Image (cartoon, rainbow over all chains, first blue to last red; front, side):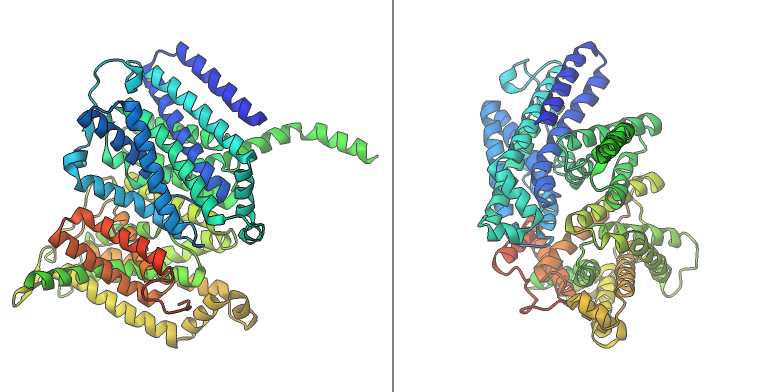
Length: 328
Length: 294
């Protein structure tokens, strides 16, 4: 709980600091980082805590985004109502995929989620009358109105994003201490023990998959109004799905701050690569991908663990002395 | 009737490449219990290597563009051996999630690397195979996919023979059945895994070299083949190597039939529905009898 409070305090500081920043590029980078962190944190709720690696979280970004925007623009359904429907659709989809795959042991879940994002993309391309096909849908800005998630300043999206990130972080922290959280921890360490203790493994997994989908979807709905454009290649692409998993892992899945740190790390690479190499793309995903390879091979607990170790190394001499004293 | 037959023929021929990709994925899972999420990027690597070899300028003779298959397979086999020695050997004891993350990281890193080294543009070496077809009555056979199909069938037959008859095949099946027992009987599991990885990645190289005459080469091209390969492998039954060949051909047919009668964009969704149905009703796979490993 202490780390949760520390993270929320840190996010509040970032929110306050954003009022000192006028540069819209920097505000944009901060906003993107915040939403990536929301998705990473939501991904971590499922994959970090339960060990079931989802490689298809972008379906929970594309699905609610399209539902909300299409309902809003075609049938003038209020955005907040549409967002709830979009989130419900994402949860239903998660329940469906989860029910088919999470009761099997083996790599079925990773394979099913990976292919799900490919399917989502092809369906968006097929139903082009509704979705605009490969051209996507631009979101026309009418007036600044918070009930329609339309703000005229990037900072407003950043503040909403930081608030949402706080909520998701508190949710994950609370979840880990809840009864369901203990079930998940038991399942992760040994399914046999969990089964013997009477935990309904498949049901627990499907429930947290649905929770993870709902949190991801909540971030997605706000984010598309920040982008003001539904781009199927980005929202439903395999790349976004896999990126979410990867930067959360780089940050450290066992830590509350891991996915946030990972998102910042990834966005930093992106910014540096853009500044250094301009439009020669690929640097960001290359560094991200190979970082994951290095992390898995050397320090599976991620950047957070490395940071902790540095702190411990700094404080080690003092502790060593006290240990020696106790030994005497 | 002709349309139906033509659709099935097209599907079988497209399915040849899926079958080659699926065979590699399934061989590795069957013996090493590891899904290689970077398999598509090894196909992409094979395509780029093959494209480079086409530029070397060997006169286009009888074999035309296909001479590049041999050097491409040799290079990718080497990369596969390196892949095992540098990463998989140690990752074997990591457990399932880290292995998934390792290979998916390699996959995304590979796409980025290709983009940095070769750029994002689409490459297609000039060749006589692209678009060429043979007519037999009312039915036409695409030459490029046709050659890939024939080689996929040949590789499947070789694979069946190798797993059944050779010393390596027997060792590999023993390790797949129970690594501990096989090691107690003197089988070197590391050696089996090394050869398995090498063969699997060489098959990815073969698939890559076979598609460059008619399929664009670009950094994320692996996704086009590997998602189909993964679905084929699960539908056929994870680890069932010969079943995965049938799975690849089946998915090619479903794709072609959906494209002919509905819309190509619906084919992935149709295959996904089949995939979920198989997982719900027959998780051991369509072509796998009771319990067999390879």
